[in-house]
Length: 559
Image 1 (cartoon, one colour):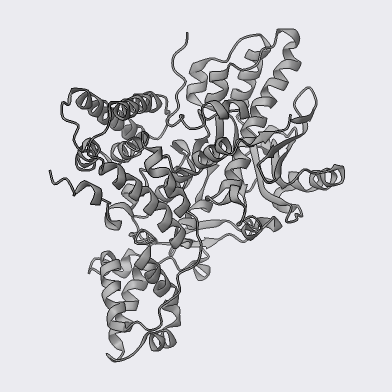
Image 2: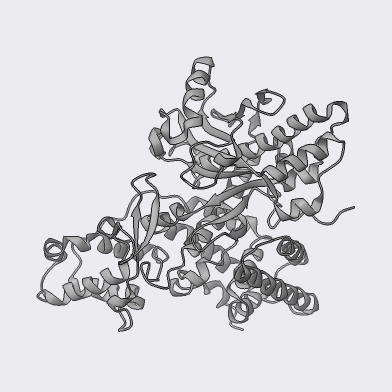
């Protein structure tokens, strides 16, 4: 093996930016939840004792104040009783079991009065820049009551039930960045604690999880009195927060090419760095094996009803088992991670390959964690007005060659993306079947690439970029995206986003994996449920002891 080659083996955009690969991604050390908890542990964030004003049924308010070295933030939670028939995860919901806001600072009574009139209404409320994140969640009623009743009787919940569900509350939206009048990203962009992507949102979800755990223990104490017990530490850590996610998340990956390019590039660079290690130590191999064995248990506790996903999980189990068996028998670990990566990418299913690539990163925090600094968006990428059309054409063919072949005919247009008038949420329609195609997003970049090529070829050889934009202003967006890909080659999904082979779930899974979500459970081809922070530290004290060793959490067997 060429000793210099593994370090250069970063995958190409054509390999990565496809539905096949994006739709098989798993969390890694660079997922945003783990970035948050590492920062919290490193900077020794503190938390005030929660202020709970709840009745015996758990209805009322709660305030969780967390203190960074520079400032304080408060999760303000509202819990209410709602009729079962009005409880839904769909975006049309108007009431929820619990609603939340991440508040910039510590609210006084006047602010609490204002928030109590606005937050339970969610998008129908009125908000100020003091509100950073808005969220809502519904209980998993059977699971919540099972846990509360068990604790009330002095017992711990059944592990079989925990394995099936894994959470007591499921968020249906986590809004940031100016949505519905809350603070714009620019208000917090220069704060050290929020430099990494989506840190305010991740903090909100982690605090919601703490409230959920405290809430079920509160209800158990009122049901059981002196007989009630708190959750065991390992069970408390295992219980995450559920999330129901639909199409509303998918356009983000399309609308923010430079940001997505940074995320994927950081991930692929981390993988390439690890593949370039010539001689892994016994400790590093041991860490990998421990995480791989944990991943097998995690896969075994990943229940889904979708038969296709269930088959994917079984296949991945078989592949990871084989890899562990082979690894235990090797005698020469030279460029071990490159050997494993090459084998997984050539022989495994997409899920097995992506899980393997995630696992080889686990022993190498010191080598790759610095890449988080490159994952946020800084200055934009301006168009270079002095470039020639011949140069533009060359780069277009190199970057969008996948879209310029003869097989991409107009018959390959089937879908269109738009925003619903009622809820201002993204929707997916079918051309000729659904209304709204006159308001469609311009996500037909594969077809725009063909139009740009024709436009370049229609102009004189000495024409400049300005002339092209003057004659074809409708192509400016694609030209900007092409410019971004000069420095961020992973910025574009290399698929027909309006074609018959569109896989919305692949886009959702990719973004959720970068968040750090686990146990993807598709409910249709357009929405799914996941679990967030499962296995993560569930208190500030727990965080200081074990901030980062919780990937692919599992609960184990009954004792």
